[in-house]
Amino acid sequence: MNSIVSITLSGNLTKDATFKAYEDKGVINFSFAVNEPGKRQDDGTYTQKTTYCNAALWISSNEGSPLLDSLKKGKSITIFTDRMPEIDVKVEGDKTFVNRNYTVKDIAL
Image (tube, rainbow, N blue to C red):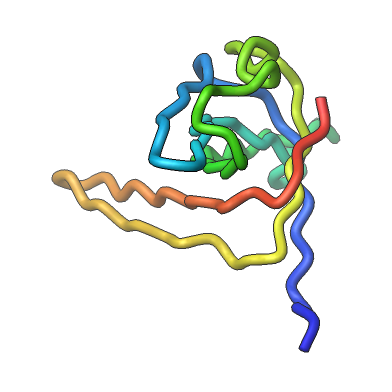
C-alpha cells in the first residue's frame, strides 16, 4: 500500500550538515528553520512563527556525498518526506521545547 503521508517543508539551514558512516550506508544530518506567518497585528502586519526541525537523509554510500558540501548554514532547502515526524518534547523550567525529527526522502537546494 502506498503511503498517504506527503510532507514538503522549505526553510534555511541553522548550521552546517554533518555526515556519519555506517557499514554500507551513511546519513546526512541537518537542522533547519521554517518561517510561517503568525497572527495579524493591529497595524496589518503579521508576526512570524519559526519552527526548528532536525532531519536525516540516508544515502547508499558510506563515503559521504557531494551534497554535504552544499548543506551549509543559511542555505535555503526544501525537504520531501513520506513519514510523519518523530516529536520530542522537553520542559526546562517554564519553557517547553518541541523538536520535530524528519527522515527525508529527497531534498532540493
